[in-house]
Length: 146
View (cartoon, one colour):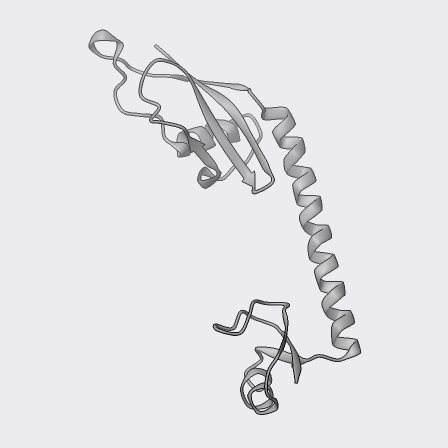
C-alpha cells in the first residue's frame, strides 16, 4: 500500500515522502496514529499544492532577505569600547550587542544568524558573516574605537 507521510517516521522516511508499506502497517499504525494518509489522486494533489505553497513562501522569504543583504552588505557598525594598557579592549563584542546595534538602525536580525570569524576583542575592523537563510549570506564590518 502506498502512503504519503505527514510526519517524519524513523526507519521509513521523511515528511511528504511517498512510501510503499504493508497494508497492516499502514492501516494499523501509520494512518491510525496520524503519521500518514493513503495515496490517492486527491491526496497527491493536496500534497503537490502544499509543496508548491511552501516553496512559494520560501522564495518570498529569500527575496526579502536578499533585500536586507543588499542594504547591509559590507556596512560598518561602530562600537566605542574602553581600553586598558597597550590599547587592549576589556571584554569582547558579542553577537547580542551586534544584533542590538542592527536593531537600532532598523534591522531585526537574530543573534544566532550572526557568525563572527573570530573573537572581536581588539581595536580595528572585524569582518562578521551573517546567514539569514541557507541561500542568503553576507558580511558586515564591526569597527571597535576608543
